[in-house]
Image (cartoon, rainbow, N blue to C red; front, side):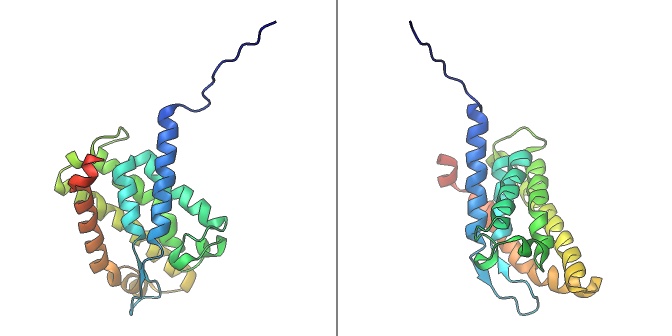
Length: 193
């Protein structure tokens, strides 16, 4: 009597690698949430989370970039301390930062679609500077559009006040994040890895 065993792959190698990369970027965005700076004219602090959103879209593309951010939101909702300043729970997803947080998967998808010019992954370093910056500007519009809507809904702010405290107050920080993302993409150390 002989027994025969066969190896069965439940998930292909490419899917497993992409899932691992998505988990890594979800953790990166969570780590970036701990880097906060008070904003004197806004109820929402400046964090580096949007930099992580940009990088997820750039490196993972329009499918796995959003998947990474959905994983991030689910982890935070389930209690992992990955939101601003180590906060967690469903309450954060309906609080004053809700619009920003819910925008992250969509913004990563927009950034990824522009950089990769569709759903097929391309080398992000091959994207032109205008493409990279344009993609992140569009991503910023998505983040702040939904962030402003969230502030209007949660804090009952008018459109002008919400735009002032929810977007205009953050534009200098966003310019620095865009510059940092371009520097990371163009870095020889990243390209060698």
